[in-house]
Length: 265
Image (cartoon, rainbow, N blue to C red; front, side, top):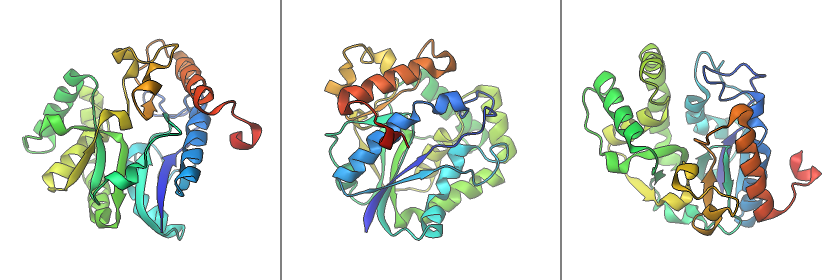
């Protein structure tokens, strides 16, 4: 059985959610992400699965929550698997990135976040107070939901996550609109800790977010000298996602060369 890399590339034809995070212009650089992961998968004998269709209207369930139907999608497509990585499509993987599937110890595997700790602390506090009965989650184990690895023993947890959404849909929407502390990431962190899920924490090099703030997203592409997976979020002056497209294309061509017509398709 192969390991699976799962990504979502869904076009809402310009009708995204309140911050338009899924409209067509944001998707433009995803071709570089998908191409990089396709080549990494070929190198490590993994299968790439890209979801292009919504399971529910985005107004009913945000796309980020829909990825937790990942086990149902595997079964519906008759895909046998060992482990599954769910990774955001605004990432590029280095061709020499080690095989992280060999580092999981068969646990739910995530990458410890290293971004705005002010945002993280406020998000934990707000979700704790309004949805998780004051549960004190260890902030130093907070992770980015743009990269997580699961296996079959996590099927029940995935169902709990989707059930949790439907049971708390209005409350989740209210918290997001009031505090702007993220949609699914912090609830997922709470779900793992409140259910005592064994976690393997990979270092920052395996999902380098907030790179601009750290000064490594530069013309020399310094992040490619220090890490393996790069996430192009929190980039300033990113109107119409031109900046993200510029940096993702530049990184891809630095690591892999020009994106040829066959890969584009």
